[in-house]
Image (cartoon, rainbow, N blue to C red; front, side, top):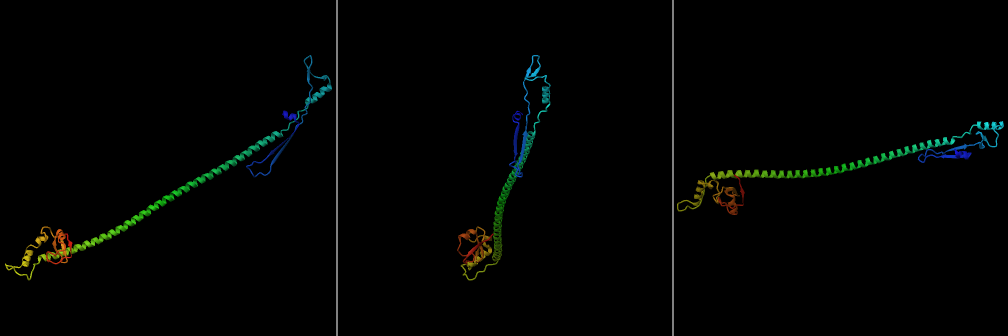
Length: 276
């Protein structure tokens, strides 16, 4: 108030501008507060104290009624009124500043919320893309494993079919061999049970031919009950071809390969082992 008392007339311009964050407000508000303060302060003369202790104004007679009347009018004059426009404008400016600050904080909070939401969405999308890539990679690996397993199964099935065909071929061959062996055995049994007849050889000194002796010995002991005609120890197990005589064992067949049949004397071209 001392400043206001010194300067009787002051002009205060308060310019309010819109916040930088709010672009909607286009006009500037200008508040002009003019405070005219007129200080009609009366210069009071100094007080002097008399000898009896009563105050008196210097150079003025207290007993003068005109002076007393002027003094009474001076004291009864009301003090000059001071304008409160500056104080009110300060309050308005403070409220406006608080309002602008609130708007700014709200805008910043909204922008931060949107930024965080966008970052969160980006993070979720990245996680989803990574999960999809991992799932696709695992699916490709599993599909490759299934393809390899299917290929292995196909190879095993082909091998099984080939082995089954070979097994069936061997079974057919075994059945054929068994049938041939049974036929040979039956013919051998019939041949061994039939009497042997020889014609043409000359008789010896006793009047008997060697063939008759062989026939008699064959009839009396046909191959010594199924023993080899070569070693006469091991059982017969080989049929000579093409005469089909069952007369040799496996060892004698290997030793006498290329020789004639010991029964009929015909040249042999091969042999077949027989399991009886």
